[in-house]
Image (cartoon, rainbow over all chains, first blue to last red; front, side, top):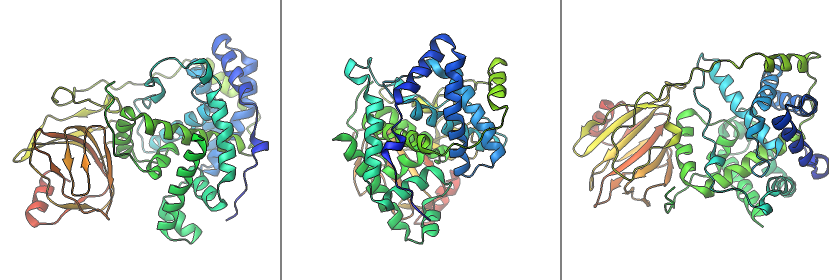
Length: 194
Length: 221
C-alpha cells in the first residue's frame, strides 16, 4: 500500500470562494453558484465514496443526493463553524450512513443533533475566519505527520475497515494501528492548538 | 446548559470512527450524549470533521454522468420527499431532578423502569432506525454494585446522574467510559445517591459467577 504525501499547496483552494457560493445559493437561490459548487464537489464526493468502497452507480446517485442536500440546507451553512468542504463532507458522511441503513430497509428518522447549535453565542468578528484558517492549519498539520500516521488516518476515513482489518491489510499488529491512530489524532490536536 | 466537570472522555479512536461515519448506532448515540455535554470533545470532533473536509478537497475528481447536473436540478425541483418523522413515542422513564435526557435519544422510546435486583432497575431504549442496537439505561441505588463482568464486545457508558467507582476510577455526571474485552470491572455506586447510566453494548457482557450469569440472562445482556 502506498502513501500519497499531502501537498498543502495543491489542496489550498481559497475556501472562501466556496463559502461565497454557498451564501449566494442560500440567499438568492443562485443556480450558477450551485452549478459551480456541483462541478467542484460532486465529482470529489463521488470519488471519495468510491474510494470508500461504494460501487460506481451508487456513488453517482449518492453524490447527486449530497448536492441536493447542499441546495436544501444551504441556509444552515455557517462559515464561522466549518469550511464548505468540511460541511459537505459531513453531509456526505451522514447520507452514506443512511444509505447503508436503507440497504437493510431502515430509514433514518432524525438528523444527527447539530452540535454547533449547542455552542453558545454568536461568533465574534475574529472567529469569522476561524474555520478556513483552521482548515489551512489542519492541512499543514496533516502534511507534517509521519507517513505511517497519515496512512492510518486515511484508512479510517476511506476504507470500510475496522482497525483489526487495517492491521491485517498492513501486516502490522493491532496495537500498533491503535497507537498510530492515537498518536496521529493527538498530534493533530497539538498542531491545531498552537 | 449546566457545565459539569467532565473528567472521562472517549478515546480519539472512537471519535475518529464517529467522524468517519463508521460507528455503530448504539455506540454513536451514547457518544453523542457525551458530546452534548462536553465542549472539549465537540472541539475534537470538529477537527476530525475538518480533516474529512480536507481529504474530500484532495480527491481526484471522478467523472460524473453527463446528465448529472440536470438530474440533480430536477430532483431539487421535485418536492422534498416527505420524511416520516418519528413521533416522540414516549417520554424517558422518570428521572430524578437534575438528570438530563440526551437530545440524541429524543426520537427513541424507552420502557418504564424494571426491577432486576435489589436496588437495580433498567430500561431498554428502542432506536427506531436500528432495532438491533443494544441500548439501555441502568439505575442503581447508592452503595449497590453490578456483578463483576467483562465484555465480549465493546461497552460504552455515559453517566447521566450520580457517581460510580469501577475499581479503576471514579465516574460522575457527564463522564464517558468505554470498556472492551480487556477490561474486567465491577462498577460500585457511591454512597449518597443513586446512579443512572446510559449504555450500549456490542457483544455480550460476561459475568464471572453463575448467579450473575443467570442475572445477565434475565435482563438479556
